[in-house]
Image (cartoon, rainbow, N blue to C red; front, side, top):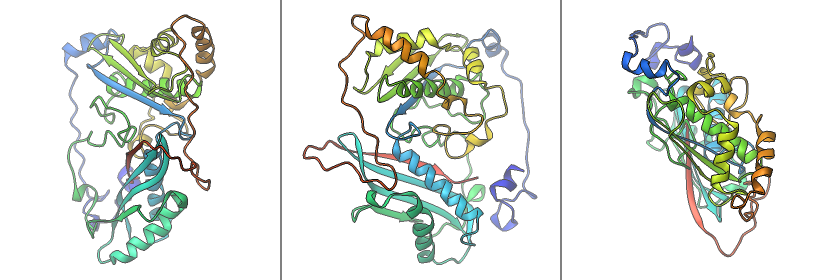
Length: 355
């Protein structure tokens, strides 16, 4: 059903729902690992990262937001048959140029669209610009220096599992924040919530998003570290990148006071023992809405706000308020005014369009 729903229906795709083979091979977990997990300890060691920024309504970095929006639109164009030659595979990538920490322009766009045999490249490029890019990317972010690449190899007729197969876990940056912050290296898909690679990364996002929504910082990066078989994290690190209204040690105290960061506590808080993970296979795990994405809920903002007021009056916990961060302009609105002193950096985000 999943393969059919994605769109691999015809044998000419090289991979089709009626003819593909499925092999199930399940073995028991190591009893040595089970000794620790059964007592509520972490299922493995590792570092997990979470992030949030008030740059966008999704509390996500703009490049990855746009990349996922382009992927969604590419799927919509195919499913609504606005053109008749698209196939299920696809990728997008967006590079945003930032000036003084604010999105100023799109440096580069990449859209790779899987298509039927024999479709002229100039037609594909024109259709993707008109039907995919223009409805998603505001015109004022595009200029004469913006580089737009549509099927830059010239052809994308062989795609999906027929064109490129391998191990899972290779799209960990697309699944998270587009490379804005670090990554512990552990993939999410295929892991149950006792594996902190997945559940603690969800919790770190939950913490960061609620902290930013509560006004504790404009940008917040959380790092959690665990040891196998040990319930409590061995380390909690916070980096507000200079935007914090409280000191980072004070924020860590708030986290410890309000949140249960043991694997079982995370599972209970985020209700992770449910069949909710199918939707995460495309368009990333974060910045999503709808049922099941409990780590995106903002239900602890009031608790954090009260705790922050208490810690703001504790000596050594208050920091000088940083200048307020402005959101990157929303579609249809003008960008930030030009300034004379610019700190320029470029940030990428990428997405895939299998759905």
